[in-house]
Image (cartoon, rainbow, N blue to C red):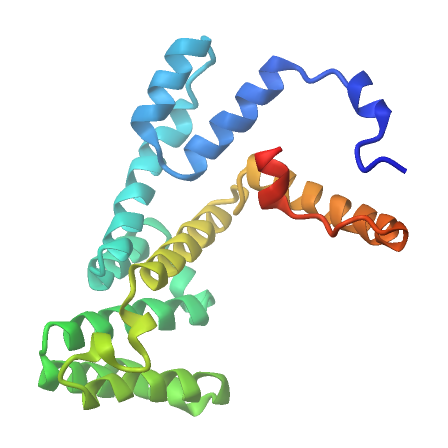
Length: 215
């Protein structure tokens, strides 16, 4: 059995649908300049109602990405009131980013005071205890970026928190938390993995999205 059934060739893909998918991705990720160029080139209608919100989300995203969590929290509370109260995990992640920024700047006393005032209550819940221990352990190192918890200071960690924040804001404003492109890839991957499991019985390799994109 072929992993790509011949029926695939009979499926017409509408160009306007592709444009809509790309547009959704650009709006979701706050690529304003690229969005304007894309709209200009394709003649699509610009989503005016989302442009102002997109600019605010972009600023919040970049504050979190740059480690300025206090500003990201402030703007989130203005733009999406109640979000951080409803999403305690996200609030913890943002507060932790600010703590890490203080530690990285060698503001030890300020970091300790911040932890006592803002993070102590999280320790009452078991799921946060190990995370708090890891963050507090950074204080024991003169060069925390060389500690076993160095990943907490990484750009990858900040990006993960920034993306989680962006998705949460979108959901809070009644917009999809994942773009149409992401959802299509997720759905396609699940279907292909299921197909691969069936085909694997005949010696076919498991499905790999990375390999598929190279083909």
